[in-house]
Image (cartoon, rainbow, N blue to C red; front, side, top):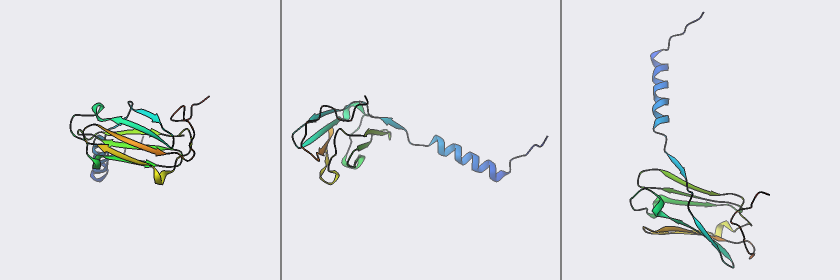
Length: 128
């Protein structure tokens, strides 16, 4: 039977990896949101009341758009990364014309500019 002892260097690497795992930022899926279909756009509303106490500023919110998806990231006062991902949107959007606005202390409003002005019955495509 072969027994290998860890060198000091290996022990330090393992310890650093364990500490990095512990310090890994917490992530949480955003469960509460609402949305509204308008003629040329769709709006998504995410209220800040569901996050850790403390103000959320513009710099704590980021939104990325593609033709078929939207992803919103909000870092709350506790340092938790809250994520809302809307994959397979009901129809294509125009990412360059889609925007978001942070209403201080209230909510983030995401405006998706529709590729075609059609009526959306669902925000994302429903599996059948």
